[in-house]
Length: 351
Ligand SMILES: *Cc1c(COP(=O)(O)O)cnc(C)c1O
Image (cartoon, rainbow, N blue to C red):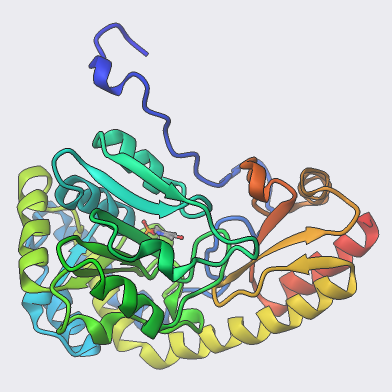
């Protein structure tokens, strides 16, 4: 840290992304990427002409992408916002909607970035413990009088509330924004998108990174009332209007046209998830029920840190968190059937 850094930023605890080691080829089950490549339509959408056209700025409005998203989700284009990954949108949401003085509620075990954005924007965090089984108790979020941020399915955990449960929370906090982070919704949970027209305080955030195999392209979107979307655009146009680059926009439009391809991949991941859960339980793991493309699993006798380390030594990366409540667990991304078979075989050897 230099002596020039604004003291306000000196205590910021930065987000630690999952390892992306470049030294050897690992079986990567640590950052919830898709095991399947981007759709053929996406590959075809980017050609030499597109690359030559990078001399031009991108379209700040992203009209083709906004219109396509509006069509896919049954909304008006003014209810759609796109940005450079959903992390970018979550950052804007903490900045825009936490109030003055800022306050935000979210669970103790969830996406680690919420804490970073809260710190960054000097938002006081109301960290609400999950129940013993790692589920969100709806009653904890009623009439809170502050912004609420819930990943559904929840990050790290995989459990999801139903749409009816989410609606109770959204309806009980009409004067505050409820951000529903649906990064994993395409793997089997119920989306809150159908509630948007009834609740002007609801902001649904989704991403192309997980279910649409585009983590490296950096494309996220938010769906909500026209007022909330206009607020997000104020921040985008006050920071970086070109934050979706030309190649990413072309990739995003093409991905939306490949809906069948991605639906098939999401079904495959759900089947592989069911197989993996059974195999892990047979090896003596406790697995938290998941509707996401990962499972959180702890072994009955061998601790989480040891399992993480022994897997890494054998070329398989999973995600181990040191937060006390989940330190004995590992979060394992659901990859291809072959990758999961290798994981299970390797775990058998370790145990
Ligand atoms: C992966 C993830 C994100 C980040 O998505 P990007 O669009 O790649 O920035 C946001 N929220 C949750 C819960 C995630 O797991």
